[in-house]
Image (cartoon, rainbow, N blue to C red):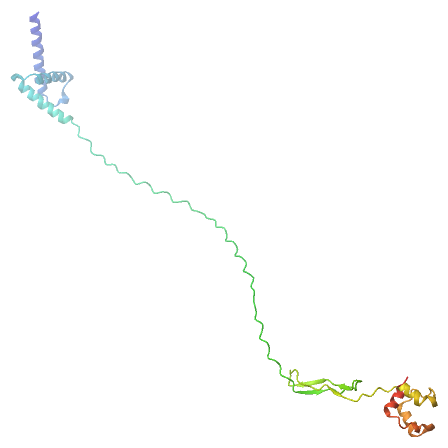
Length: 230
């Protein structure tokens, strides 16, 4: 039984040595088969666990190959990523604003204008009249006066002055022709001579017709009153 075990162990060790030699002779780890890779794993365990002089040369070759494979398989670190952020797009232009402005209110009406006009200066006082033209004197009144009026005066536009507009006179009462006829004519002629003109009566007196020469004292005013008597 023990003999069988020794034989089996020797066979395994021999196979392992052959696989190790084959693995060390391979220049490219990618060309190893699955059996070679398994044997290589066993070689790694043996080299890490034993420092036997018989294995040193093989383990050095294995370590060199493992270092090269590790360098080939090493993945370089990723390059730093530089992210360039594009600037944001400009904002859209604002929509046009339409402003509707209400018309301004109409201005208030102007205040009423009060115009105060100064009165014109008074005209200069007119000149005083110094010369007058008069109408005829009126008949003498019962108060013993008679009057007249001013027809023109000078200077032109004058006022006032001292015109003489009245004077004293001897009042003579008006003649009563009817009374004179009754007194001097009716006794001889009745009413037949009424209405005769003063000239006819004066001619009869002057020619003493019918004795009328006695009435020569009658004045012309009295004869006119007798002629005008009704």
